[in-house]
Length: 109
Length: 114
Image (tube, rainbow over all chains, first blue to last red):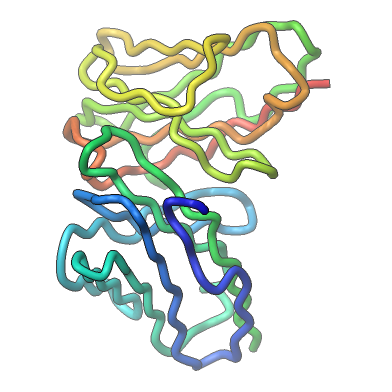
């Protein structure tokens, strides 16, 4: 079993829909990252969280440390949101990042 | 544009060869991270340098090595290349030394080993 699990693996949505991507982890962590990777390959860091909730524009990320779970929400989705979304955690006891396998999101017009 | 540059963009080489990938961090960032993304393994953290010193080590093979120079640019050296080393190699930088800091990613180097 992977230490970081994402769901769903693939997601297709219609433009305007509210989207949720989930990340569960089994290790103690000190920080969690959400990354976006576009079809061309480039990676953008969306959020870095250690507690609570953060918001950037239409994107919201939440983390529940007790439940070892984080969610990434996209409101009013748009075709340009189509990308792979990757969750990564920094283990509290280890000094390295562990990645989830990613969620491939396709938003259709 | 993240401010992180990587060269070359593409690299095609043969098994057994050695290559060097280069990364220049954002101005002012002291930490550089290297990642490998292959089709079968996904994204993996390789190694982190902070202000010239190795700070954290991930799944980096012994055939691979890295260093960070006084001007803070970093190089990842891959030797005795195998077909399975074909992957996208990303560099990222952050201002500080802990992996919990926000990272800015470069565009990546696509390595193909034939």
